[in-house]
Each structure stands twice: as C-alpha cells, then as structure tokens.
Amino acid sequence: MLYKFKSRATADLIMLEPQGRQIVAIIGKTPGASGIVTAAQIPVAIAALEAAVIADEAQPEAQENDEAAVEERSDVVRLRQRAAPFIEMLKRSAAADVDVVWGA
Image (cartoon, rainbow, N blue to C red; front, top):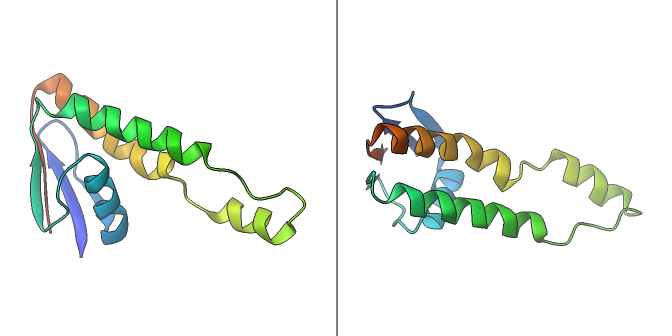
C-alpha cells in the first residue's frame, strides 16, 4: 500500500506504507487507508514531527571505528529526510488554511 497525502496548497506526496504509517503515527493519527489533518491540527502535527526528528538524531551513533557500521549508516535515510517533504506540505497547507488528507 502507498500513502498518498493531498492538499489543495501543494502537489501530492506519496510514501511507501512503512514510512507513511510512521509519519501518521508520529502526528498522533491512526494509520490506515484514509485520514485527515485539519488546518487547526497542523501546528501540533508539525511540532510532533520536529520533536521526533530531534529525538531520532539524538540516538547514539555507531562507533566510528566499526567500519561496517559506518558504511551502513551512510546508506540510511533518516527521519529528517523522510519527514521534510511532509513538514513542508503541512506548513504550506497551514499558510493556505487548508486540510491535508491521505488515502490509499
């Protein structure tokens, strides 16, 4: 399943299911086939995502002398990278006072 986020203020944003479910859960919504973040809920959703990004980045890094861990870490897409397009969508939607919805 794909998560397709839509807003009248931006282009559509498509995420694979695991990442979409993670983002939806972080903003306090029930992951599922469809949902909505109302314009009034957007500031809280942005704050939750930004806090999750900070918490993700605060996790201890692998030891620098562990060559395999360093190589693996360089290939990892962090939450900041995954959440950035959605945070931008939320910010633009808030500025336009429109909701963000998602569906399968």
